[in-house]
Image (cartoon, rainbow, N blue to C red; front, side, top):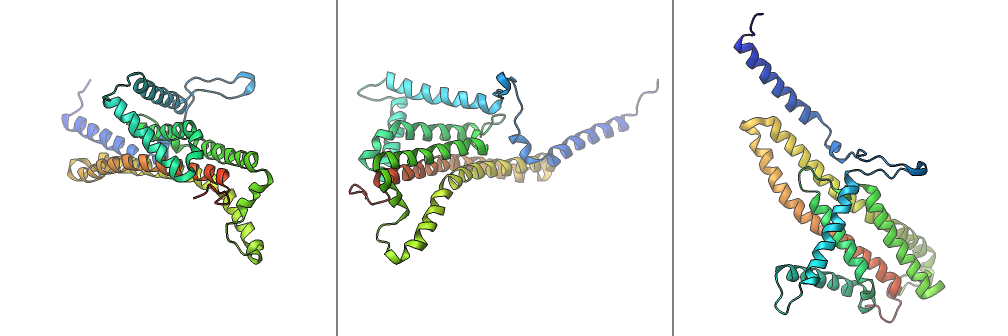
Length: 273
C-alpha cells in the first residue's frame, strides 16, 4: 500500500480545520437556544420532559435558597461576607418596594424578592459557557409577566371591588376626554404583560446571539484577525453581566408598579404618592 505524501496529508488536515471553522460560522446563532429532552416524560399524554432549561431552573432555585438560608443561619452582630451580601440584597429589594408601592407593599416582599433573585440568577448563569439562559425562552418570561399582571388584577378587585375599574381613568382627566382616554388606558393595560415578557426575552436573546456571532468570527478569523472579534466578545461578556442586573431590576420594578397600581388605584388612593 502506497503511503500518502506528507504534503497531501497536511493539506487534508488544513482542509478539515477549515471545514470545521466553516461549520461554526455557518451554524445559526439561535441553535444555542434549542432544547432537547434529556429525560422524556409524558404521563397521561402530558409532556413534562426534563431538558436543560428545567435542570437550570432547579439549580437556580437551589442556589437562591442556599444563599438566603445560609445567610440567615449564620447571622452575627458583626456580619460576615455572606450576611453582608444578603442584607444588601434585602435592602435593595425593600427600597424598590417602598419607592413603588409604599409600606403597604411590604407584605409582597417574599414574592418580589423571589422574582428578582430568580431572574437575576437565571441571567447570570446563562453567561457561563455550556449553560443555558432560561430567560431567553418567551414561555418563561410570559409565565412570569402574566402571573404578575393576573395577580395585580385579582388584588385590585379584591381590595377595591368595582372601583378598581377607575384605574382606566387617570387622575384629573376631564369628563369630555373619557371616551378617548378609557380605550387608550385599556390598550395600555393589556399591553403590560406583553411588553414585560418580550422586553426580558428579547434583551437576553439578543445579547447571547451577538456573543455567538462574535465567537464564531473569532474562531474563523484565525490568529491574524480573530483577536479583534474575540476582544469584542470579552467586552460584550462584561456588558452582559451589567445587562443581567439591569433586566432583573427593570422586570422587578415594573412588577412592583403594576402591583402598586392595584393597591393604590393608580393614584386614586389616599396612600398614593
